[in-house]
Length: 248
Image (spheres, rainbow, N blue to C red):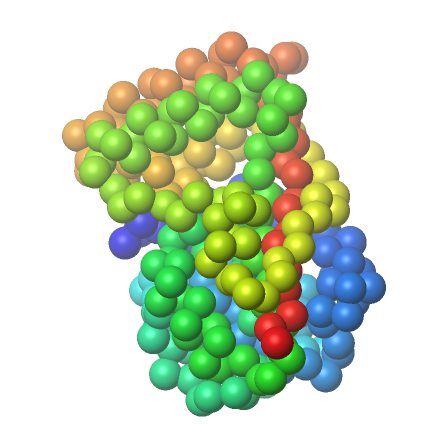
């Protein structure tokens, strides 16, 4: 479980998706209010909430037990949300049932070939697939420091390899369907020291408290804060990237 003991940090300190995301999806005819949506890797429901506010019925597919508990509590009173405690590769959902399949900040954790097969199986004819990420802005020096930290501890913990998020990979994966790519907005975050540490503990790359590497991980997080903070705060931004296609 990559997110064991991390759901609270994730919900509090990961970026929230702006409403501009919903506007973009509607403008591109990828989302309508009456669409039945399958959301893969719902996490703590950051995107789920936006979809529900839009009036959609949402099936949230989540295999992480801690995230499942979080979602159950967060949306327990919403009749338009249904939690599916399965994997992206084998959701057990009915065939040709959904208008839109969407995954935010999660597809890189799936087996891409098997997940694509499952997407195609449950999607209605001419349905839509949307993959979303917020990526560290490449023009910031801090981006490279944090990526180096994450990759270092991914290797030290012998974690699974993530799917590379790039347009050429997705073009090959979804061929002969045409996939499109847009950067639609920027999210900014500004944190105090304790908030920044908590945000770094929300990452799937982060060590757990009982991990022998945890002290080293925290030390390097503290170093990044001391190097890039100004007046007691650290600030950075993310680009919201969307990959989307209509399945013919």
